[in-house]
Image 1 (cartoon, helix red, strand yellow):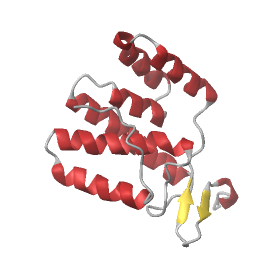
Image 2: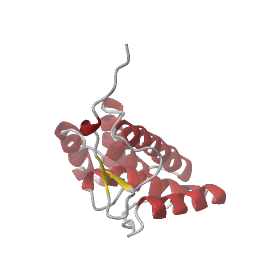
Image 3: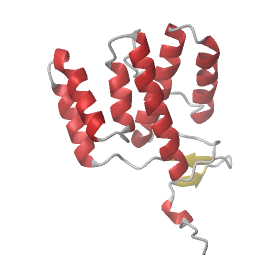
Image 4: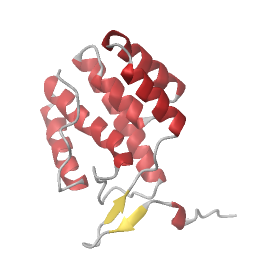
Length: 156
């Protein structure tokens, strides 16, 4: 027996140019709330509190991007951003993305993935992985040619 998923349940829309545009579903409100609360804490406690949110909700792309922003060194930032990037790819594929098409910054629910990818590029540059940083720059431009905000807090 073959099970076919309902294509209407995926957030992929054709754009005016014909390329599909994917919008990730919003993260659960409980996760968003816990993450917001962790980020409101005193700076010296934020990383520990965000890490606790990520441990409780390991599929939180926004959580991994925030953990990357708060990393204690370049390698820790790189690792957290990379996990966020891969969690984002998994979520995109689960929502109909097939490796090409737009993932726009304008859709707030896409921002965790795009922040993780942007942070990964910055961290790759910081550790001298320049070929990876170049690929990420090109990938970001393909995902949203109108531009990605410079929101990533990475300062490796």
